[in-house]
Length: 233
Image (cartoon, rainbow, N blue to C red; front, side, top):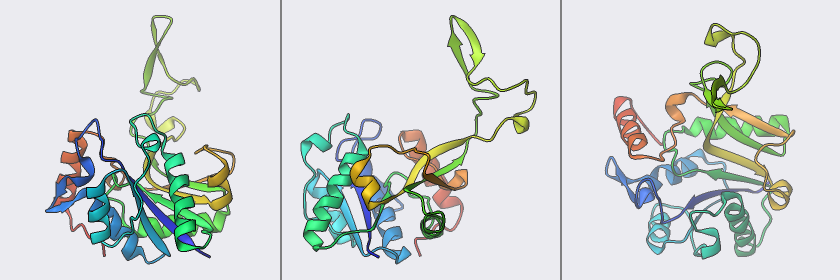
């Protein structure tokens, strides 16, 4: 069974300029995900998809493989991620002259995931035999209890269930944390859907689920990395 890991990194970022090159503990952000992928020891190939020569060169330096530059139509602010991953898969199969049965995407903006998260998500994916898997964490706010919206100029709870006086009594909901995605090859090649009736989830704790989208997220990640022994081993 051949397993491919993709790590997708654009040079553009609205929230944090040059986010993937930002230093955390003297290492660029991209370093952490590449090292996690290498140290998990489950991937046949680890490749980076980027539109930046600088990111490509750094990725090769840290042990991933990047021999192509992602085309502009897959690199704009409005470009969806799955087509970029599919493009990387097709490029990789031509380059390595083999088919990959399982494809992971590890989001570079989630450096707090552990290597065990990668390994255990993979084990769950194999055990449940689903088309794809996404990682999640339990929602800190619940749409059945304390998330509201305006409906016809009135404030209402987002989802109706029954009268709930305590958050603990509401149905459990999850946030998609964008840390790890896994696909079977056929499903990735033929579908742009993330959620189907044949999707599995792997739950991670909140402290390993932070996705760096803003400067505040970056501050939290830096604090967490310094508050406990963070390792890629």
